[in-house]
Length: 281
Image (cartoon, rainbow, N blue to C red; front, top):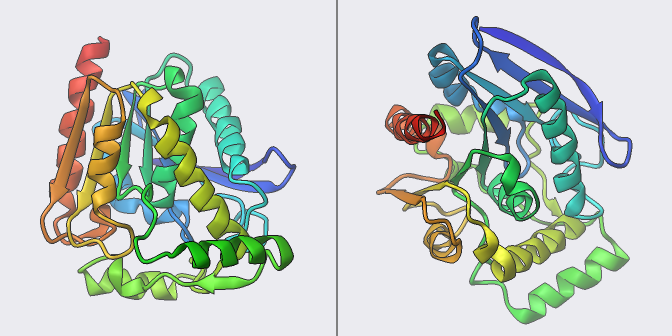
């Protein structure tokens, strides 16, 4: 396995960290990982270690305001900055791996980013895998709370307003401990601007998600407390893909790739990918 890393410029000239893991031989296909809120691309080693020895290449970036990339932590001016930067990286990968099928792998907030990305660029991809996608508004958010958040987003956009609960990411306590102690994970509060941009993006995907038509696999832990687990079924019903699959893992927490039974999840992903590579042959 070969590991490479570097920086590219975002659509607003920020330095964006990227890395990839490559098999020794020519890759069969490319995975483009879109990570979740407050974390970074280096937290997907279970996926890397499962797939790279099987001949797949895994690429990932740290979003602006995340990991090793520039920017105020968990802050973004416009949600579209995530999309535009991801497109820049996608085009970079295409120059390195021309003609290779590329599958988008989006987790949590990365699932929302991936869904929005598909609305613009799905024809360039062979398929998408969305894990615990954050595409449904939390039911506890009142209209008054949302309005207050919008006001803060305008007046004090970098104010912290809510925080992820680390114990909800996995039933594996060592994963939770590593997350809390990871210097590249941001354990503070999400900014008002990013929170309102996420809600705006959820509305956008909800209104336009029926335009998604490429092969898609949606995977969700039923005991997820970080995103509404009902969002997976909502997205599955929303997209127009004739080729769509949903896997619900009973009792699993948010990060299904980091649960004690992650090998089962990753094997399900592998079977789905293999089937779609056969269709492309």
